Image (tube, rainbow, N blue to C red; front, side):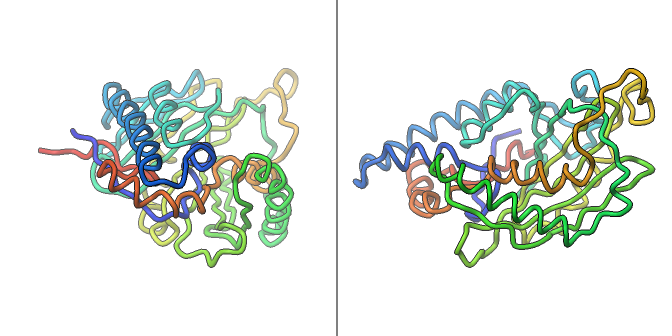
Length: 305
């Protein structure tokens, strides 16, 4: 296997927000300092790639997701666990926390990656899924995103706005799986080919596993089957399943399924919204400086016979 990188459009939700802000403040307008900053970040990212490659695991393989579940990783996919995966995310300018477990990449060509987390919020009641209204959820998501723009401004991240659903929320009660995806863009921009987070969730007794596939909106239909396949390969361990919930002893989450879409989503968009203005300024420099794409989604670990 070898590391292979490729740059996608500047609309990706999961990339470079904090690093972009830092460099845009630190770099001078001269070509020399800009190139130096790009070279420094390239070195950081190359080190992260090497660390990820050293611990990568190619499917088919069974991947333990904490003490909660197993991912039966199919052939054609590569798993990178944390802390190497967290190092890789940080090199792209992304925050991680203790919910982050690892990342999945296509073993062959594919302009996407998937981030896997376990959030131990307690048992999430799904009663409201029977009555939710997609239009109302979208309105709540837009309002929450707008309210979060104040915090983005403090962090030097451009304001964003939600423009619609890429995938209306769908919940399958029999398997306790939730899927949804919202389109967003830099506020006031024409949108172009925005990035999109295709969010899939598997509910369990103590919380939920999220598998967030990130790609370009124009490519979403192409890669939806990958997200579906990976979600289907995730199974909770005995005693951790949604059906194992014990009302007399177990913690119940403070919110229901609808809030997982409308509330938590607004927070997520705030964390992973890309700094588009910076990206437009530095993308060309990054490619020239290192021949590798620093500002976009990476295609790692392409198989080579």
